[in-house]
Length: 281
Image (tube, rainbow, N blue to C red; front, top):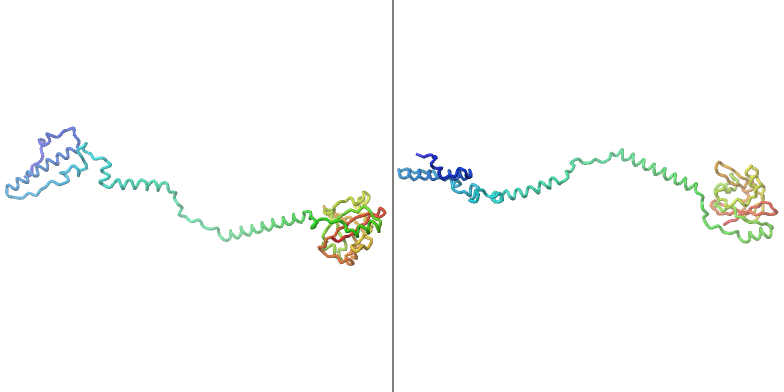
């Protein structure tokens, strides 16, 4: 019969000792009791196979050592493999915290109807900008396409010597417009914006023209043929211009003047009377 442990079996155990040490002592005593019962049973003619479990006979298997009864945490982790698991887990957790969560929602593209509307509006805006630029260019004072040349010597000699003229002044150098050679318009225009100087007029002449009083002037064409021309001033809103009318179509025909030709108008005086000369450049 198996005997139970009694108080006498615990005489040598320090009551202030470590509880785990008690368990080891109890297991040891229990093992001795079992061994005694085993030996006693064999002596009485039967086999008793009760054995003390191996893990109770080894302190190391319980996770204790002689030094204080406890193993260090580092050693326990190394034996159980927890050291590798824990060290590998912490960096992964840190990396997961640092990673910025990615949005799983894809950004849709702008609908085609909106896209076409915006692009078409942009084209209209660019078109309006281009039109405004063209308007500004048209309003700008056109520059001379070539440097202003002096009057040819043969004209000078004819005016100064043969006609007895004086006071040559360049009034304008311009490119002939379609209206300048158009028979229906029948006039040559001298825009104020292109006039080199208004000093070719006396104060009385300028006042008369401002009060809509035209003048009859002597006109010398590119062939050095003399004719009489009506010289007047037209005010068209904010723009003003001088015009030569009446005999202008005959000058165009006889000299075969064409659109885009560059010409000059020179003024001079002959016996104090205002005269003009048309010169091809």
